[in-house]
Image (tube, rainbow, N blue to C red):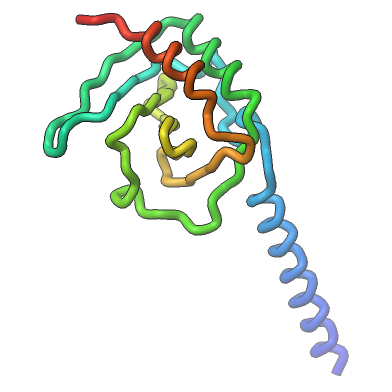
Length: 149
């Protein structure tokens, strides 16, 4: 009888712990808390813009530390929440303006501007709680970062 009671208490404690972890995982957090990226870790920004169906989207790369700092400061003002239902990466519409932050180890985070969504390399998806993104700022940032080749 005591063993059953002990196992029941362990089961309840485990369930409570799992529930607390789940609540914490899906609670609102600042961008910097979720992504753990700072300007020293980001090696480059890769910008892509939409393209007609079937073509590779045009992209350009920037390693300008001022641009990286500016983007991270802009993003730090936003709160994110992990999406409860994760879509498969193949189902997401990446044919839009995106900014990909890559570090020196080729870890990356993709910012989908139109969908106000952030996707990590392992498929975790976050939506903006206080969004959408300030599109005026994003357009100016993208245009100022583009160096025609």
